[in-house]
Image (tube, rainbow, N blue to C red):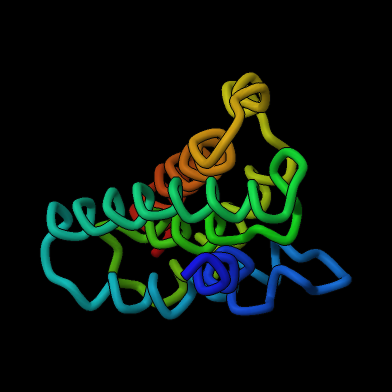
Length: 149
């Protein structure tokens, strides 16, 4: 069971990419985000995203203990399970691309308040920065598609 959790945590192998494992691992979230966009009603979409985020916490917790170290780069479940947040309430397929790019920018650069959360350990600590990055990306995605799309 633990090896299955680890396999999920490393994005079915994508987190083992020698180049930009977080970005490569986030690609796993694109089908999830696309599927989310097919569900009518932002409230239902938000509930699903909360559940995916909550699922990320124990997955990342177990994998971190198995792999060792704080927030190993190969753990990407936090990235791909929070990516769908970036498209809540949006129907334009281009929102997938902008959501992906914005999510990665905010996860990599960690602007405040994301940076201040880096001291938190465990699955919650691994997931919370991606959750906030996704929320910021969601806000910007809505601005982009409200004004330009």
